[in-house]
Image 1 (tube, rainbow, N blue to C red):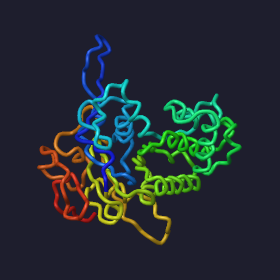
Image 2: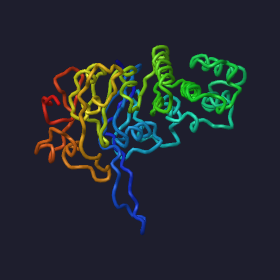
Image 3: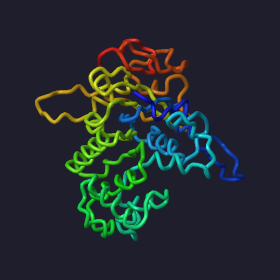
Image 4: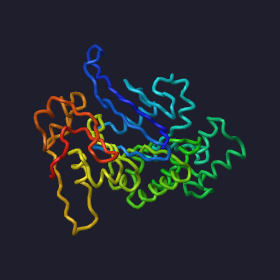
Length: 326
């Protein structure tokens, strides 16, 4: 498959300013060396606990926040070092759907103007052609055409998220970053939006970077999964492999917490002790060693790198070749 997005050793360190003199007294290591790629027509899900750097990763790829170091390549063109005034072409190809559909829509604009704005901004259509394109996008996201003259407050949460998806599709995007795009919705509406995204991907060949903490949704939607912990990817694998044979102890703990909709099935829960360390002062060695049930001396001093586990397509940042069963 042709690679659309490549991210190499991406870092984002937010400076902490001194209260007295405005100097830098430290950094928040939100991203600290993230590497992955995403093919055309593929979905890669980024999962992990709150504060692990998932949303920062999405915003950095979008250039909504500037990377500290590393490289971002879009379809063979490096975009992390493009001057902000020259980002228009990249903006057309990479769009985003945010978590809260209400706050991400202008309450004073009608839906027609919200969806049509990127079309006009990029000079893609005007007049009656613009109206036709907006109507076609309403059809794609399964909203009635006469709804284009309403305001956002006249829609339900799921309908507003459909409007956000239509706006992301409007300029002809190749890649859509979904930043917790279904977490604010009811369960039944989540399923509808996920199915819509899957259908649009099949129809348009979209690549999706799906940021989520809901592993049940991820298992249904994605092709591959990257698990993040404290600013780093600790495991990356195909969906079926990760959910059936997870390697990293952190991944195993995450999966053990997913509810099973069958009261007769008993799952052994892996309870992690302690809190997530601060990204201002991450632990030496393996960042997970302060909570890992299998920690040994090497973990405390040597940082593990992503390496093949022996299962096709799976890489894990763990010193253990075989992780014991819980």
